[in-house]
Image (cartoon, rainbow, N blue to C red; front, side):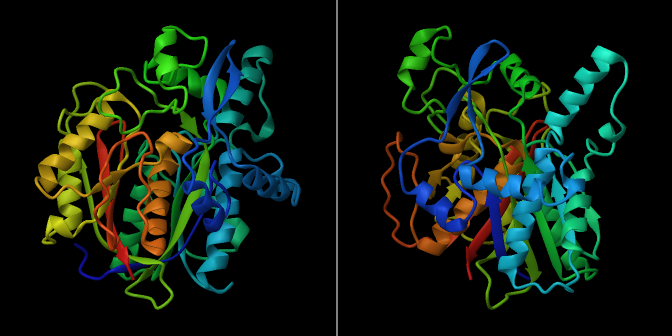
Length: 397
């Protein structure tokens, strides 16, 4: 548990579910998924693209400044989400705050475009380097907001977003700043990125693929995240950005407070593996709770990527930590897919919405008895390749 709580004074996102908290919450009220089929590399693939409202905001930003027209979607997504968060936070234009925004893949579209150009011509564009560097995201957001504090970029695979929360809290607790804008952005719906996931044999099958029976069983919900009885992997990629505004202590207008954070890395047997009982998650959740009685945690928003091993190992870790007091369990990847670095931030957004509206959002194809009527504390999980787990405990302000 943290010695001093950290307030979340605003959160904003662009995702398949929408571009405002109200729109996103409305999307959580239905049992529909937000996947669509596209043609990639000569075959159909499930993806979860940005919402129409989000795409409009991104295009509006792109054409507003000639310097923005050559930027990758991952950068533009982060810029739009950051503008929205800072607007809602009450931070003034002269507020000094740090920025830490990360990405798992970075400028995937531009990198693939420039690399193809190089293979075909032996030459590449002048802006190929500056527009594909990882630091590109935070630096452009800092420029766009006119920020004067420190700006940092990093990549820790799929737990990148929640690692930025850890970094922001560390800076605040150090006394060097009292406010930090943290989050992640990802635009991975590109040929090469999807091909990489398919090569790992973890991607959901599309209609017409073999075996056909696999597809037919899950056509209503092609991503079977948190279905612990599935016999096939069903991960699907989504895109989006999400950022939060952090402030030291308990702030009056806070949406919620961060009571505890945890993190751990486990020794791997394979580049993409995670242990049967997800030791990294056990450690991170215990660290986040500290001395808190596990029965006080009302719900866990799980990482649950929709793979057989990933979902089951995290569930096993939860059983080890909570024993007979297992909280309500949910995930959003059945609905909007895996957004890599942004996934942990969208998990955090779901947690904040459930706290705000005092309503648990279940996975529709799972049978789970919802006994709790008051959501006060929610654990948020994220993990990435390399066994880097992060857990964040949030509660009502």
